[in-house]
Image (cartoon, rainbow, N blue to C red; front, side):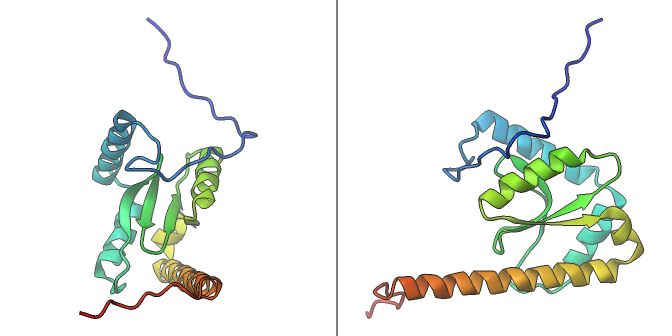
Amino acid sequence: MTERKTLGVKTDAAAPAIRKKGRGWEISEKRLDALHDRAREMRRHSSPAHKALAERFAKADLGKYKFTRHAVIGSAIVDFGCPMLGMALSIDEEGVDPAIATRRDKSLEAVGIRVMRVKASDILEDMDAVLARITAGMKMRMADKKSRAREHAAANPRQDWSRPKR
């Protein structure tokens, strides 16, 4: 019988560059379809921490912001993603290699996605504290986006965003 080959992770390697371009961020359609299939499978077989946090997000009134479970962003699958904020939540489960998670986080932060890490045990033990941390992170991210919008407006004074008159 042949031995299975596994992928090795280089911990000293730099984060891979993700370039936003088209549907798959320069990822082949076949690879992107495989990522979506894997995310669908992860949603079907979620851990108790994922289920508990997803249930709280479903009940919460977050306004125009929505966290999607096992979202595909570029070539990464994040546990919860909010594309409107450019924010992702990563749940640290036992038995998961931290080198892979760190590498994924670096590549997501390179394209402007802020990654917040939460331990699965914290979610199951003290959900309110975790939700307070997530809310604080969301407020910080909203403030960052507003300040960047102000900086952009100051740098581009001739740009007019008003509606045309009819």
